Image 1: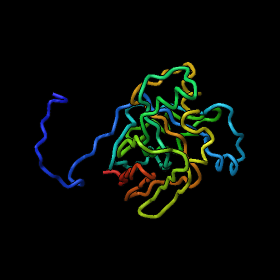
Image 2 (image 1 turned 90 degrees about the vertical axis):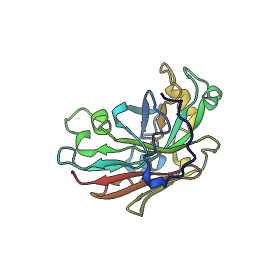
Image 3 (image 1 turned 180 degrees about the vertical axis):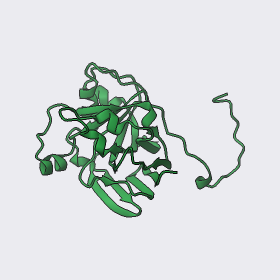
Image 4 (image 1 turned 45 degrees about the vertical axis):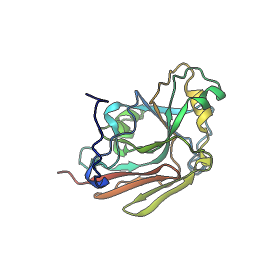
Length: 228
């Protein structure tokens, strides 16, 4: 029964075990156009309110999860992001209440099947492109004692750095983001908000690994391989 296990004292190599997700969100809310750099380079307007979509539970994955390429999905893009974990029920929250509702922070790799986004004119398929199985890896831990201001987020593809940006680049910072999202939308303990990414987004390698590293949190690794 869950919660009834007893410690054995055995020490196991980390690479020999599968690390579980640090929480199981009721929903993952992911931001679009929340980077000043991206808005400037792509000619996007600074939004007045957060622009977001929701990633479904089947997309959740943990440390060292595996993404298989396929002809059906096509090119898959990585996006290294800061994730906020909600610690208490939150609805129509003020900035102060939103700040108190933050349990901690984690690393997120917001994956996207690029070909699905604009598969039909006049409609952007956010859920289809970003909600496939295993397309929302997060972890490896939740850091509860860090200040999100000025953190550096780095993304490496097979050891080569592809992204390096500061959380100061985010248009909506965590507490304000939670306050605005919670207007009419209840956030529950364990829910995850992916804050959006900055410049440097690119394709997953056909084989190898993508690492998202954030100061004070750790390294989230996503394994990539051809179809088996």
